Image (cartoon, rainbow, N blue to C red):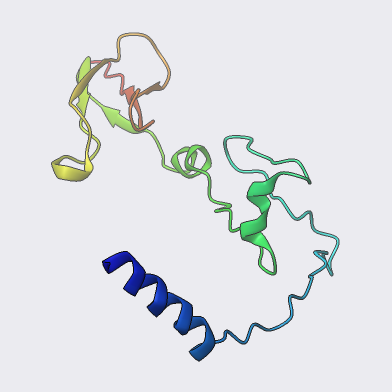
Amino acid sequence: MASKKIVCLLGSSNKICQPNLPAITTLVRGTASGEPVDKVTHTGQKWDDDDPRLVRFVDRQKLVNPNWAINLIAEVPPNKAKDRVVYCNGGGGPLGHPKVYINLDKPGNHSCGYCGLRFYKEDHHH
């Protein structure tokens, strides 16, 4: 009985509420400038032109941060240390990383495996 009433209600609702749908238009995707539609990211990710994931970039450009972390950390000068062993914790606190110890016995820069900060031993000759 209840199902007959629901069918009657649904049947009458189509007569009362008729949707007024606009016509579907098609868009042609193209670029006004000579820039590629799909920019390459720092991981080398580039999609094919017929990849369905590119639909999210219709009428807008893919936002790729040009400041790659490897380039930003290269701009930070190496830290000099007097000790043979230093530690790096990435700044500490919730934004840091686990504490790692770095041996500076060999000459040159030695980088942290987590954050890339570089350290070197300052030689003291007495």
